[in-house]
Image (cartoon, rainbow, N blue to C red):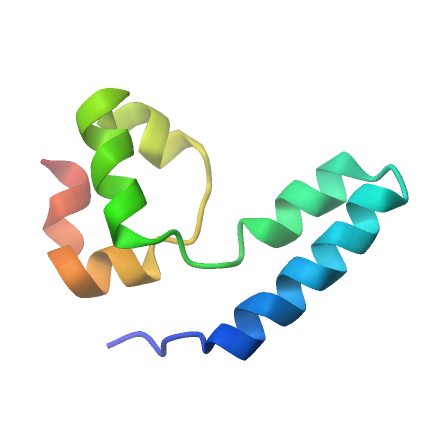
Length: 76
């Protein structure tokens, strides 16, 4: 089972990403933010409203989604 990221770890990444954004590095901001696991509830909404392909093509960390819904959920 993948190791979960603590809230403090998520906040630390978000602060570093915000600093990149403030410095004008939008690509760096997005790259760093995508290392934070996407919340399962948000993945569910995106899958239902926008589609599975968008969810898979974005490159977000899906570890919490897979832990909650199972790895096959992303291919259904």
